[in-house]
Image 1 (tube, rainbow, N blue to C red):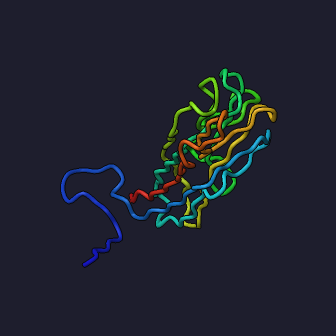
Image 2 (cartoon, rainbow, N blue to C red):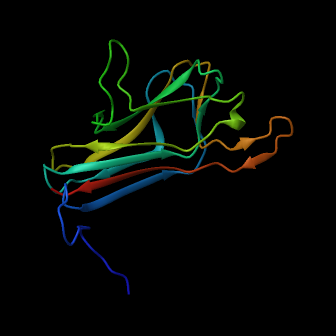
Length: 179
């Protein structure tokens, strides 16, 4: 018999936020590529959730199954950020001069795309201070339009065209932490 709950809370002891009130989830299982030097949404990596209280905090985690750029000498990367209703969330760092606020970067690490690692994971706490619906979404920007960024890209053998591994899966999870 399934058991349903509206909250997960410790039965004894102290806790910081009072448990998990609700969870939102989305995933991207296809290959996503861009060479845009303007911020673009990463397909399917967004969650809309309505806070139960203005004091609620949200734990946000997104994982990119595999992410790389077409530049493999660490010279050109791509920035990632999480927006809340089109504005910066608390996951993004402060801006420095003319540099964009980001929460992380990806870049080509190996001599070719087939040998780059994954997954990449980012997480943090955000405080939207509202009881209206909130949409969190992941965005990406390339440092150079000549060096595309790829998420979930299958690993191919460039000599034979054989696919070694299917595309990976990327996810975003948003958990409301009750007060």
